[in-house]
Each structure stands twice: as C-alpha cells, then as structure tokens.
Image 1 (tube, one colour):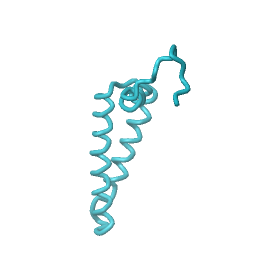
Image 2: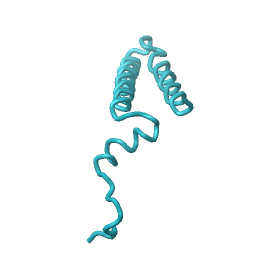
Image 3: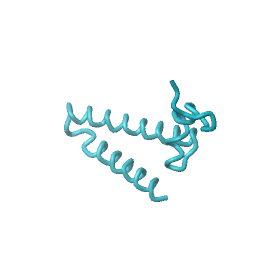
Length: 81
C-alpha cells in the first residue's frame, strides 16, 4: 500500500541508485565512476605493496603509505573544490 498521494511525484529509483550520490560531490555518473575506479586501482596497488612488504620488509617500505597519503589528499581537495 502506497502512502503517497496522486499529486506527489514518485522518486525515480534509477536516479536514487546511480545519480544522487555523484551529484552530492558535484560529479556526473561517469565522472564519479572514473574517480572511484582510479581510487580502486591505486588502493589495489597499495595493498599489493603492503603485502610484499609484509613478507619482505626491505621492499616497498613506504609505497603503500605514500599512495594512501596521495589518495587522502585527492579526497580532501575534492571536497574543497
């Protein structure tokens, strides 16, 4: 049973899932996807470096932390722009 009146426009579920969040950070769907995929790529690289470092401490000593600092900076700049 619906509680909305006939005069109340229905919320578009496609917009709710795909467009609402990107709009909150002033991005289009594709722009947000590009940002998120780039972030995912660099987090995966950082995870790999941390894994290598766990087994061989002399390798990748600062790689993961440098990547995470750079990603944090991107997030901070994104919200102030």
